[in-house]
Amino acid sequence: MGFEFVALSLPPLVIGTLAAMACALPGNFLLLRRQSLIGDAISHVVLPGIVVAFLVTGMITTTAMMVGAAGAALLAVILIEAIRRLGKVEPGAAMGVVFTAMFAGGVLLLEQSDTSGVHLDVEHALYGNLESLIWLDAVGWASLTDPIALAALPPELPRMGAALVLLSLLTWLFWRPLKLSTFDEGFARSLGLPTTVISLAIVTAAALAAVAAFDAVGSIIVIAMFICPPAAARLMTNRLESQVAWSLLFAALSAIFGYVLAGYGPLWLGASASVSAAGMIATVSGLILALAALFAPHRQA
Amino acid sequence: MTPVELAAENGEIVSENLDGAPLALRGVTVSYGADPVVFSVDMTIAAGSMTAIIGPNGAGKSTLLKAALGIVSPLAGRVTCWGKPLESQRKRIAYVPQRASIDWDFPTQVRDVVMMGLHHELGLLSRIHGHHHAKVTECLTRVGMQDFADRQIGQLSGGQQQRVFLARALAQGADLYLLDEPFAGVDAATEAAIISVLKELRDAGKTVVAVHHDLSTVEEYFDRVFLINRRRMGEGPVAEAFTQDALHATYGGRLGDGLVARAG
Image 1: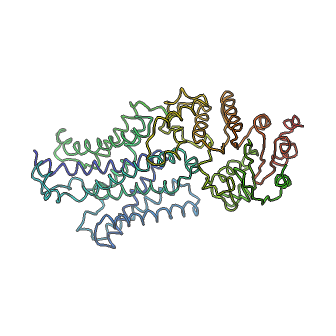
Image 2: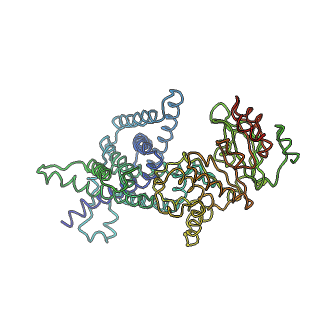
């Protein structure tokens, strides 16, 4: 049990949990700014950006993916503005059209390009490859203290960990301006706070989380984690500090229970195969939101 | 009146630099689209005065206030505070935005909102000490909201929310207070509480400017008025500038006839 769990289940569990928490953190601010749709848009737009970055560099590196995703996000913003102005379409519709079209374009690009050497195909784009992020060098719990074995951990794990640590540090450091400008932008500007920079930084933080999480867990989890844990957390408390804490807890619970249920749930029910971990994690986060909507203490708006 | 005020009365562009004025706008023009919302407005707020900015709906009252605070960037014109650039004087300026501009469902408590008024003092990371909490409680007490410190802001009535915003402005400890429609949609008790706090501020030598929509209380509440309808329509002490002619010019039609009859 020890060996099997540490080598096969622990890495995807930890990666899934880190990814869920990294997305939920900026998701809190997107939710309160009524910009959750931007999180959705980002996670779609990331795909063509990553594919183009891969086609240009021939590799999957975090830097190349970030640059590709940033380029795609910029293109998306320009397209949304152009459609909104030239077509006189309302912003939500313009956004919906652009990010769906760009995601579809990314899928076409993927199908037409040779990505057989890397984990980059349409299925991975949607639900990642969490189950295959195994730790071959592990021989048991003792491997957690063995530097040689640790060096062979799936690279997604340290990358996701670094992303979560960075986002947490930034949130802690800029907590007051973040809270102030999210609550009352006009007042924040009257204090001299750079509110435009802060808005941009929140969207960039969300993009960072999405890109870091993307190839490990896919866009389904990214979208779900931007929205479900913060929305459920909002119903648990009337304090922003506690809301963020609850959202991180819900994100972790979704990832852990989702992964375990996906692996063992079907067996318990008598079926033979397991189901997609990404799909199950997103479903659990949705269930948590549903339970919060029904029973949480601060439901009344 | 000073020569500058006389010139302003005549609608001339006042170019003199008023070093002492807590707030001076020169040729401020703001536009959100093709048409300017505020066009080449000069405004001079005298120290220790209490000024009402009045004008019809869509006249650019709120926009003028936001331009004065640098919340919107003017296309043209200049804003100075005590003769210096606005940016260098922000710590001396408090702002009460329109209540309707806020999402009151935001997860925060009354105490937290007032604490935001101490932002210049607290900065990014300095710890909140006992004297900060005491300051917050003192400001809440001045507006009669001390018993609501731990309430979620969405649970308050409109008038109570407005008082919390005023308490936050008080916490800023400023010399110039800019308020956007502080009496909009509040109960009579709140209106009385707010005006008494504002008069206390004025009596303590502070300067108060409020966008105001109720012409019937201008004479009772304020000592100066600034009339605007996209352009500057008049400015001066209530007794001189709040006239029937000025209101006709600003609002058009016969609005304000009865009100100004009292003023004579």
